[in-house]
Amino acid sequence: MNSYEEQYYKVFEIPFRDTYLHLKASLDTGRRRYSFTKLDFGDGPIFFTNAEKGDMPFIVSDFNLHSFFPVVSKEIADKLLPLNINGFQLFPAVLIGDDEEWHEDFFFFNAYENLDCIDFERSEILDYSPDDSRHEVIKYKFKNEVLDAIPQENRLIIRPHKVAGGGLLIHESIVNKINKYVKDSEFKFFKLSDYKLGDKYK
Image (spheres, rainbow, N blue to C red):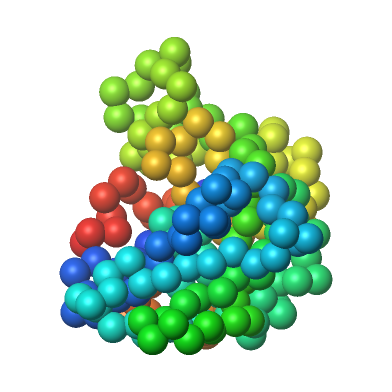
């Protein structure tokens, strides 16, 4: 039996850093419902600004997070563009600096489909009730039969259904491809088999 929890990761910002870049979607980008809709390339890129302008410097890295969605440089995107992942596309993004300079050649992880792949009966859930529309997961367990039915190359990035707070689950093969571009002083990948809710603050 596959131990899928050994194969997938969650990524978080390192908390309590002296400097960080929190990206804020522009008003027009927000109107496009970018966080849960398949974006149309014909509508042009989406735009982000520094949410902490005036308080934190605008310092861009190859790997950035907007909420739980990665926003990555072309160097990272080029590693992922050949992949055919269900419910996912890399979408052009522009990061606007505090001086209004446009930083192009960035890509947003547009994960627009949820996959019902978490076994909430076997997972550790905070105040679990099967009637809840969303569940706060303390410790993850997959529905193995769901992942078994999907070719690995089509499920390298998963947006799990009915998980409170959302989050993307990223396959180890992608983590291995991009890890050298991710500053360990800024972000940390947690293997699901090791991860428990709240670990990002440790």
